[in-house]
Each structure stands twice: as C-alpha cells, then as structure tokens.
Image 1 (cartoon, rainbow, N blue to C red):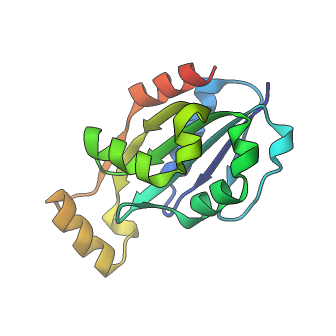
Image 2: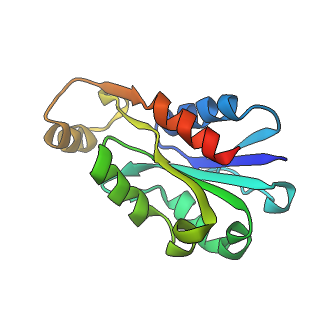
Image 3: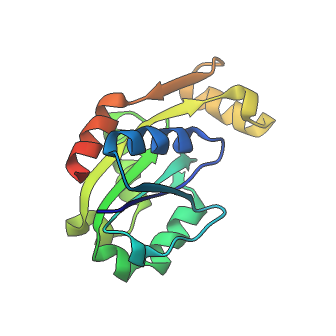
Length: 157
C-alpha cells in the first residue's frame, strides 16, 4: 500500500515531523509540501495530512487541499496531524478546529499533535512578541512528541 504525507510548514518543523512519521511507517511513503505541490490522490491508498498551527489556525495550503479534495479524502484511510506549541486538551481543540468535520469523524484512522517548535531565530518581531506572551519565555523551544508519532504510525498501519 502506498502512503502520502501531505503537509504545510512555515519554518520547517512540520516537515521534520512528517519525515519522522515516514520513517516509522516504512516503505512506499511519499512526502508532499502542499505549499508548492498538489499530489494526485489516485496514486495512494493512505493519506496523511498535517500542518503547523499559528494563531490557532492551520496553514492555508492544508485548508485548501482538504476542501478541494474532500470527497476523495473521505474514501481513503486517513490520518490528520498538527504541529504547535499547545498541549493536551488545547492541542486536541486545535486539531478538531483545523480539519473539516467530514474528515475528522469516521474517515480519520489517526489524529494527533506531533509536537511543536518555537524558534525565535526564524521569527519576525511581531511573531516573537506574540510567542513570548503565549509561552511566557524568550527561549527557543522544540518538542517532538515521539510517543505520539509512534502511536500515529501504528494506527495508520
């Protein structure tokens, strides 16, 4: 079975998580950056879609991809993930708000938050200001949720 991991990332952390997930899934996994490519869904048995969360919203290429391919995605074995700094219940709420209900309900075999990164070196002044307010820290932070990635991969196999 072939698997597609389609993602959108602003600074590269979501791509890193998608690569970790691809390694856990094994053979016949293709990665696609939705910010620059649109995959042909007919080639895949399983589709995983993910994106980074900024200001409570998922990246626009993910939203667009889901809405344009809603019918085809509902017919696949589907996984949905987000990357962001929110923890536990807040992350779950963000995930639920990021994808169409049709995909979240019966269609999604796996749903997870795979971790987050707050890298001040990559942010502009306004982003730094907002993130300092949200996190309460001026230190860059990275958290790859390996347990969540492992669980997600297991649910997709």
